[in-house]
Each structure stands twice: as C-alpha cells, then as structure tokens.
Length: 426
Ligand code: ASP
Image 1 (cartoon, rainbow, N blue to C red):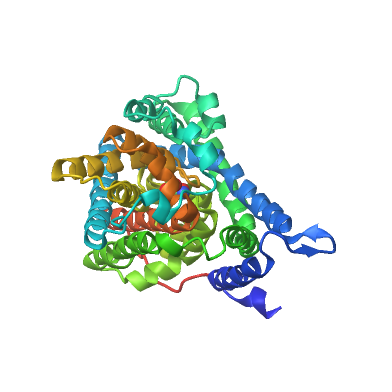
Image 2 (image 1 turned 90 degrees about the vertical axis):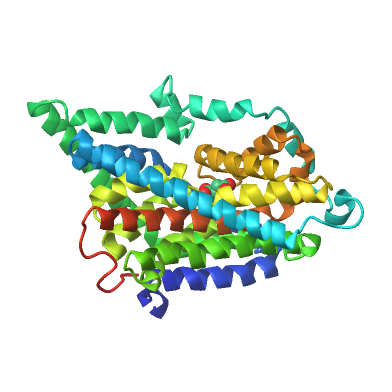
C-alpha cells in the first residue's frame, strides 16, 4: 500500500490527523459491532506504550554504561559531563525565562470575580487533592536523596531513573578501570545488550503510526474541544512560550553552531511526533536515540551519554510549564507575586524539572511542590487539569527537542563530523 511506502514521519503525521477526526467522531460512547471504539483506542495505545516502556530500563542502563566506558578516561568524562550539564542548565533557564516573560505579558489568570467560578475546577478534582496534599519543599530534597538508591533493582522496578542513571554512570566508569578478561566480557555484554535494544526499537518504531493513532484518538475522545473555553488564554500563553523555545531559542543555538535547524526538525520528526502522542520523554527515548544516530548522524558515544541523562534531567518544556502554571494560579487567586517570589519560582522550576520523571502529567507533582513552597493554595492545580494533557503532549515534544539539540551541539564541540548532513531517512 502507498501509505507504507511513505517516510515514517509522514505516516505518523497522517495517523495523527486521522486520530483527531476519529477521536472527535467516536467520543467515549461510540461502538463498533458492540465493542466500544474508545476501549479499542485505549487497548492499542496501551500496547504501544508498554512496548516502549519495556525498553527503558535495559536501554538506559546499557547505553549509559556503553557511553561512559567508551568516553575513555576521567578527563574526557569530566569534560563531556560539564558541557552536558552546562547546556542543560542554560537552555532550561532560557525556557523558564520565556515562560516568565509571556505569562507576565498576557496575564492569563487575571479575571474579574472568583477564579473557581470563572475557570471552573476540573471534574477530576476529587481525587487530586489527596494525591498532592502532603507535598512541601522537603519533597525536593527527597527527589535528590533518591539519586543514590539504596537498592538499584528496586529503583529500576519503580522507574526511579535518577538512581538508575547514577549507578550506571559509576558502573561504566569503573568498567574502564578493571582489566583483562573481565573488562572484555563486561564490555561485550553491555554493548550487545545495547545493540539488541536498538534493534527492538527498530521493530517498535514500525508500529508508531498505529500507536500514535490510538493514543491521540483516545486523548481527543477524552477531552473534546469544549475544555478550552475559559482556559483558552492560559493555553495560548503556554503554547506561545513553548513556541518561543522550540521555534526561536533552540534553532538559534543550532544556527549559531552552523547547523540548518530545518534539517534537524526533519531528522527528529518521528521522535517529536511520538513524544507528542505519548506525553512521555522516557518512553520516547528509544526513538530519540535512533533518530539522532541514524538521521542526524550523531555518534553513539555522544547520544548514549547525553540522551538518557537528558530524558530525565533536562526538561525545558516542563520547567517552562511549571513556571507559567504557578504564576497563572497566583494571578487567578489575585495574589501578587513580587520579583523575589518570581525568582524563587524560576529557581524551583529549574530544580524540580530535574527530578520530574519523563512520564505523563509528572509536572503536576512538581507544581504542587512549588505552590506549597511559595505559599499558594494547592487546590489551584484543579484550575489547569482540564487542559493539562494536551499541554503535556506539547511540552514533552519540547523536552525531547531540547535533548536532541544538546546532543548535536555537544557532538559538534567534541569534533564530530558529518552531523545533520546527508539525506534524512524517515
Ligand atoms: N510528560 C513530561 C515528559 O515526559 C513530563 C511532564 O512535564 O509532565 O517529558
């Protein structure tokens, strides 16, 4: 069929458009031969997500071990590590500042009358307060405490990526410090596991159009379009700020380094569309790695170090969203945030975005921590729940794009050749 001859990103894009139509037509009620269409979307989407998630732990562990042991020597590792962290901090800060600027400019939360009445608290509110009730600033410390896990297997099974990354970094580093047979066996083992994970990624990628169709159709059937109503300006504020980062700041960095940003969008398109549909940068990680290596031509040495770290630690879109959401909630409750408090919000958004997991709706926990830390009402989260999912899809794409630009820029600074040249594969 002609459809399967198209490049993968076109297939995914077509699936996405069809999904919006199908989701709107089906809603939650439609049935086909007595089976709910919604549950079919849910089932297929879940299968696709499961397949991606299945790869995360072995992929992250093996790629970091292979990456770090391939970097060779503590001096190289230190240099690459410093560049990577420097890039993360700089770009996340630029993203948050874009958010701060737009939310102060458009003031989406400033309304006449009571915020609850104007914006309406989401129907899902009942469960959420209990979920976030006990959050306070101490939770930020908790996040960093977990960076050194007491039990690495438990960290892996609970999906605590920071702990797993820390352990893998150490493991990879000391792999280069042992000798003889042990070093060879270990090196071969992890390299083999990594290669196998990438092959399985290839396989799962072929199902991306179907998975994306199901996930997006389900989300559209869930939300409908009426959710926007009073939240339209908040929605636009987030989209505009994300747009500044995605279409101006990051491409500008690529341009300054001598790359054609359009070529990079093209190389990353399948991963960006998958990030959009899954709202999870961790689940997208296999595709991000694959796209960067195969389409953008970045070496495995760089991607396997920069990307797994980035998928957990570097979240430009998430940090931006946290900042905009907190200031929006303050505006909605008529609470004026002075400069000092706004700077505190910026710093907290930066720090908490590091600890936020790359899974859907993870920002909400971070937002509740910031609200508690600056003394804003926790129930404010109820104001944004209705549009959170769609904004989650967008901020996740920005998160993934930020990581991918980092890999390109760091690879270039390490003297790699042939990046973003040659024709893009789909
Ligand atoms: N869903 C986001 C991600 O995976 C995290 C968040 O902002 O909720 O990157």
